[in-house]
Length: 291
Length: 234
Image (cartoon, rainbow over all chains, first blue to last red; front, side):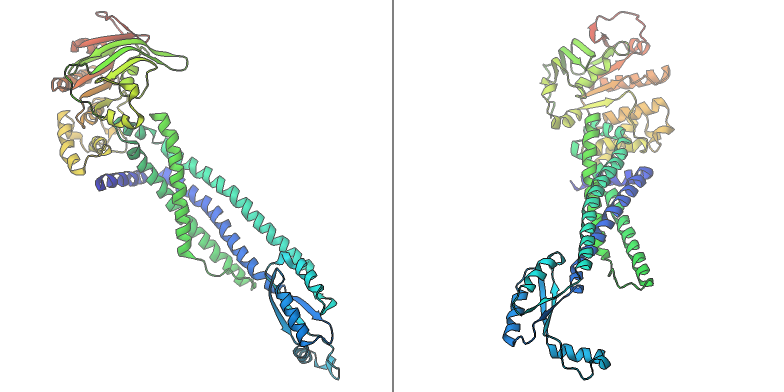
């Protein structure tokens, strides 16, 4: 059995070596397809991660009525935290807010009594629920009429942008997934058709379907594996390049480090799976024609 | 699938066999029997149905009517998963030699053994022996394109014999050869037949066929017709 497996693997590797041009075509097709697909997927993941962090940067300010008691403040805090879409509600006592203001604007505040009310800084967990949170907070009895301050336009703009990116990622990703499959299938089918003679000879000498198929499937997996590794290197290089560009522009956004090992595992795994599936599908067609 | 020895019954039986493709009738009620150890030529013009007869026996083609038996078993009854096992009982020499261009002579022959599960050790022992038997041992390391037509045919025959088949099917084995090499190849097939292998050859090379003096089955437009002495076939 081991001897036979060695034969199947050696046949696959000999074919890889001897059919360099077709192998190159298949590997490069897999690499480009997975680079586009994987690159987009990676970008999508990063954008999603960023989107998770962004709501914190769009805090809501809630001002309470003058003379609100400590119990009312505590009750209001509890009510705000219970609203769906609220991650955190932090009380800002009027004394602390006034002290900060006096530090920042000493001349303007000199000789004045503290005019500030108690307030809350509310952090959202989901930007799309901002409207609902704002309304719910505005209805609370201790909250000043029009006491909820929030940049709705900026929030909506960002929310729409993120939705569009998610939609683009999903749609383009889906299309690329199918296109990559078709390209890889065609590339592997070409390598198999170029060796239809070999298939016929194997069948004539009485090789079983398994023996006939395996070298081609192994070869397809190797094409996918190499293409996947190449795609990972390309995505990694793109990541490093983009990170350098962002650094040179002194942008606040940071891509973080690229997960090289995970990338190799994911790209090579996807490539090998693609290669195996496409080989099996191509072989079914080729074997129907040669048997 | 085994072909158990059964001396009383013919090895191949065709009984009113028909093969129809979409619009074409390739075999139209063909009947004959071949006993074990026989050497039989199927002769006829191009398109007469000679190759189709061999393809029905090797199960490359399924007959659409009549009965075709190999060692008593109906060939259409052989399941697809059993076809490889059926083919291991026969050696097939295709018209175009079907050698792998990227493999050396010994690799081409070894490949047929390895593909059916023989060990590397077994291959090392058997391949030189079979190459010597068909007089091509001295070109073991050559690639097919470095060989003459006759030498390529010898390699194809060596490959067909490597798994000790009881039946050898050769489709136009001299079709691409000059008369001298054609006779050499036929003599080689005759030697194999003397050793007990049943040999079925499709050929339109009447000069060689008549020289061999073996049994003839003549086909014309998919039917078996009586042989005509001294006939010239295109």
